[in-house]
Image 1 (cartoon, rainbow, N blue to C red):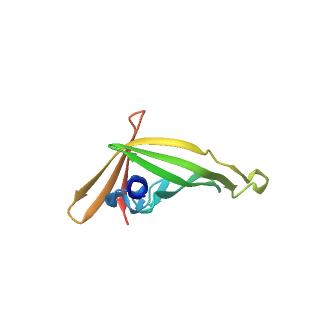
Image 2: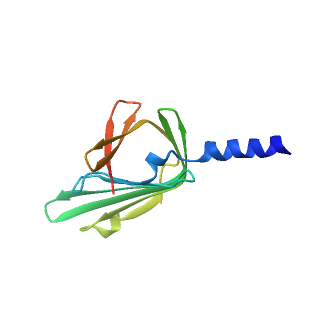
Length: 137
């Protein structure tokens, strides 16, 4: 019984998100696209991305959202999206508006949290080398 309890405790510890990741992280205000991650201590995440493409007299606005579980393996952060959706609205041509399932699956990043005075920043690096910096709200 004691071994089972220790095993359960070890699994629970693996499922916990490092405390420095917990919270809401967002791209710099005014960014296009705007990216927001909400990360909880029980290893869940919600990610939203919104953007606006301006053209004379019309806008195309898109939003994607996904949610799921995350795992951390050292310097790697794995986001396993269980649900995802994508929505697009064209202000001039409503017939072009649509919503469809988004891209679920795994996204992996090298990650680190940096601090510059009172500002906390989550730095995510994609396998391609692209770096995304998000500020803690």
